[in-house]
Length: 560
Image 1: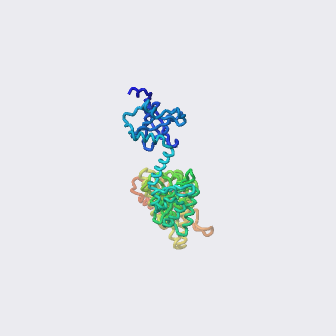
Image 2 (image 1 turned 45 degrees about the horizontal axis):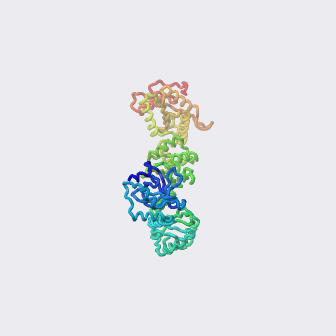
Image 3 (image 1 turned 90 degrees about the vertical axis):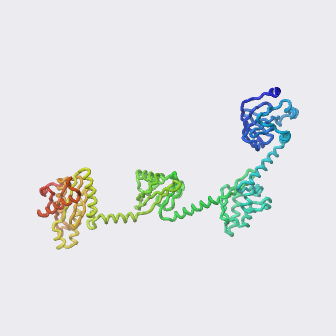
């Protein structure tokens, strides 16, 4: 024991690398109990490490030749041997290096048995080619059992190795596989077994294409469709020796899903509505042809898979829509929130598109764009007909009452001035009876046009029946209303209907009233103005009468 302890050892841990297979294979290790004669090496796994190898210790220029003398679960006890380059007479014998100064064994590791030591010693002198051959055999055995097809071709494209999965995949007999067939023979075997889903007249060209693909070293994957419905992804890889490694993997499910997706996209390309599909990060994964045409997006730009924000901004840059930056921000926010509320966008060509967002199960979005130009136009026309007097293009009685009610609620809330004028054409019955209904219609249109000329944007002018008109004046008290009424009366009086020499003079009578807190609703204001109009008629027509006020003098200056 004392003699063994005389060997100088270091207790520090060093890092090293196990080198074998002509230094092409490297395994990291931790070096323990290092001495001049040997060491204990700790590795992840001892499997695959040969009995003889080189050890390169960090910070040492030269590697050390080692022979394994015992194996543990993750440790190897090694003895250092002189390098092969030393003269033979300087190399100590195995007996001398082992007996004179024995190496400490790790107390936790069992020493190798005598047969194991003999095998290790014999392996230490084994030729590197034997080691390499053993590793090659192990690799071939592993490749033979992998679940995907593997074929190794030499430089002349003859099969040197065909694994079990390929044989089963293509129903290739072992006798043919072991005969090292040419690649073209393997292709024709597929033809003979009717494996390829290719028309018979095209088989020859199909085989030629596959052979050319392999011969040129093309590494692009190719999907091979079989008559069984299966799909195999084929890929070739050039090898350093000029040969090829071919791999064959079943991708039926992936391709089937891709086919279904392509059918879906093709179907969407044939619908007239625009459709965009976004991923959970709001990147555009697909735009059908209608959407691309609608937003003036080229196919190349669509394939870039831009974000939805970029898409919306692109539509503005291409002048596809006249949306403002504020509208863009609102649309992006609505899509991000998955808001399904439809939004109408007017394109620069005048069409109206209805946008709607739907949240997909994967967290993405589906945007649909529907041309609703006709619907919007019809709705606008219907609204126009429902709210407008056909003869004068003024608001009709029903729509006036809706607008007047809104103004009345504003009056009640803020107590701001609100006045109303009611006026009609003097002696209108005489015009209808003597000159005809066409003349009566012309008189109504004439008065409506004169009243519209001086109306403020906030004023509400309407024809409420026959020759009777009404004008609601927000932010106007009774005195101001009287001035507006007088200006209108004077204008009608000095503007005859028709051409000079064949014109017809006309006048109007006007009743004016202002809203008060005691009135329950806007109809009370209408009633008071109507009573004022009746009094103006009674007093002789062609005049302005204000409710609960003295008659308005015709010589007063009209309000501006």
